[in-house]
Length: 329
Image (cartoon, rainbow, N blue to C red; front, side):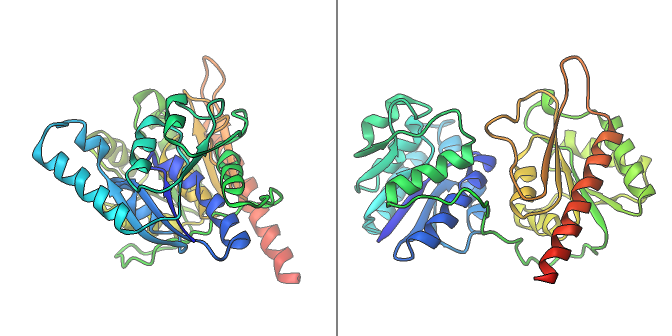
């Protein structure tokens, strides 16, 4: 059975779908999976070994020129590629009108959330099979339940595995006892003050760790350089590809991050990960992992660096105990 997964964005949403793929691998070994995703996140999807083919869409780019020749050519090419694969089933794991339209291009039966469960009820008009999944569950559990209903099995919620491992990308970066600081995020109100990142870096150095940080735009570069200037032990990784950054994150012993997709990635790698939320509720979409924790700022206040580092030390200790227990078995 050949199944196409449609989950086009965002990075965190894509990563939240990996445990559902892991469930399916165990319960339906007869199923092979392909994935359709926004071009920016193709490298993230490719991290999962069960995904055979990654189809890319460019909805964000196409929206800037909906009548342009490139847009029509790209959409037509995607339609041909999806239909040529002759899928037995498409699972729209996003539940949006845009994802339903993409799913329809495959000309195969579509499974998705029912009207009461989808984020945009109009998307369900495109589905052939609709499933009720409570909306008050975490996004990971919702997707796992959807896959189970669509493919005929009951997920085992006693465990949580993403199935992904860091990419083996050559890098000049020299590893060690490193803590990756992911300060960049898409919205200004979600950013932790630069002074807090600097203090966190100092506290980590005092504990024998090497802070690592990077940047992807000019604003992030200014913050990264400020951290490195204030705490000279900090390793400043130049602007790099997503695969390269993922590889460096994967070799870190600790990750501290804002509300950003790369924080979800660190958690999915199974790394000790502290997520700092200052303007959004982690609620049903926050990072989940065996050694993941989220600190939420109270209204009118902030999360103190000492709290973050203390939480990081707890997670590192928990990981050590877990590894020791596994070694005894």
